[in-house]
Image (cartoon, rainbow, N blue to C red):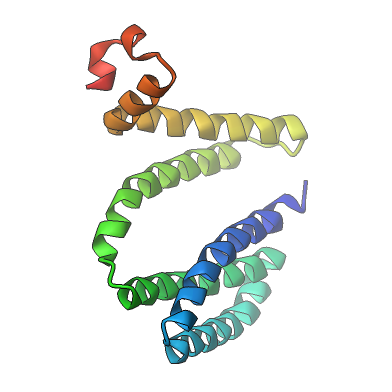
Length: 168
């Protein structure tokens, strides 16, 4: 599956692009077109500066990395300034996602470690990595987000059947 790695970067880019499109519209409609323009120029400059050296060093994956890094900078900037434009506190919006970001990073580290220690390029191998990622993330939720677990178990009627130490 040689095309899988570049496609991963394109998926991340697509997610970032879709997330930032809403905040870009907020910037434009609140009269902050100048900030939006500066962010778009910054995106283009960072992409231009990164794409050639990263492509030279990492090949097609480097081009994907350059796209993701420049898009991430653009996304963070757009969300920050869009939130300021409508009077929202950036800290209160970011903190709830920090925990899930840490869990996702842990999942990514475990999956990457597995990829380095094993050799495979079949569809079954890819499915195994995805399942491993889900399991690691689920264990992280069980360990670090018990209120979320309690909320979900209430929704599906499992709370009475789960041990109280998991939901409290």
